Length: 89
Image 1 (cartoon, rainbow, N blue to C red):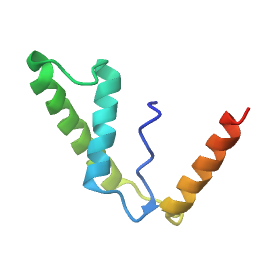
Image 2: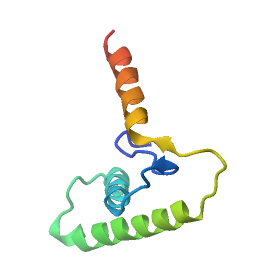
Image 3: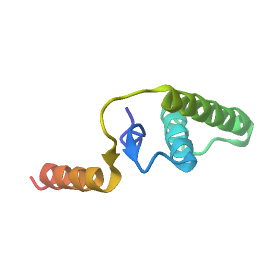
């Protein structure tokens, strides 16, 4: 999985459209190997981003859980702490 794609499900506040679009863009970049597509591939590239975003949105809206949502700020702080420990070596 791409390091830049973040978990989007079960957070408070809920995921935004921009976050879904950003995750879809990262996924298509990883799969295609293009950071920015050429003019000849641009239409297919951005159509894939839109398709992945739509499927992701459908998935996120369909999932159910009994666990309480995670707090984004707390989870980000935990991630920073893990990174600090990991890279302090």
